[in-house]
Image (tube, rainbow, N blue to C red; front, side, top):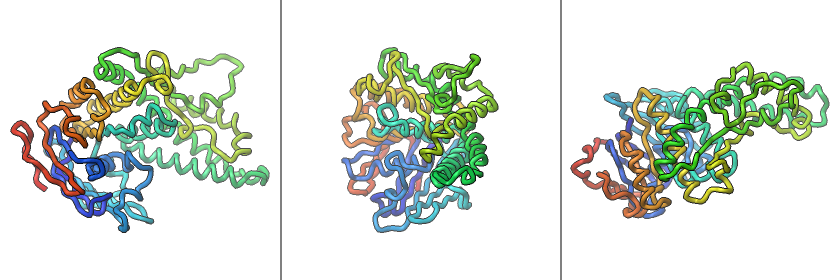
Length: 401
């Protein structure tokens, strides 16, 4: 899979922009603030329906405009698909596939990308919300249909929490509909929890391999789920076989029925606190991921270089997983200003790790930061103006607009 052409209207700093891209390595080069990251932000948006830089869409629309439009031609083998997204101020976004109107979430079925960016350090050093976002973006990339369960779950949490808040001090009758919301919370939450467990199980082996290759050492990187359902459940009177958080294979093998029962037990255990506080206290929206090196948490113990390497290795593991499972070809690899954060040895190792993907898109402010032994197709960005350069002899010829 690869991007053949990107067209933007009123997106970020671009009143309009046309960017033709080739297979293989593409380099977008320009000083900070010129708009190179805005281009890859638009490309990555087609894969996740959200920016990797900001939490909302408003910042993506050029100042003074009511909407932004991004169009992209994607090639997978011999097939070409035309995707379009319109981001609107104050009204729902709109989407098209090959000229046909679809729900925006349908676009993610046609495009897959894995983005590496400085913001990824939040995954290992930031709050749990950053790790949950990584998990959910990975789920969407792996199973686009998961967008339905994720959006339905978010809706149920909002409405259930609203009910809890409004019922405080009003007596049991105000909570008459709570069991209905409990059922939906368990239904969608269980789907998400099992999908996350399966994802971490399948990422574990490639994570270890990529970390070792990137760092040149074995620091035993490990991931495990920290689930609020398990923390909230009462200690059973009779011992039961409950998989340890680090036993990802056993966790992923738990049946949906068993996990749903555990979820209900947890809800029952925190019912009083939920009513008192007006908050939904258990479920995937409260979960976290433990990231460890040599048996110690990455957050608080790992160096800056180790933290960066862990985040990059997680993304490399995800890219490998998507490549092995997809029938549409490789995900597009986006490296947004990443090489500036790495020493020369890790720059070379990272580039070698992604070199055989069908398309790699790199942004850099300083050309000396990127490996010089790569046949780049360069585009320079100066004050929002795109200046493509002739491809080198070993690069694929440029696709037309």
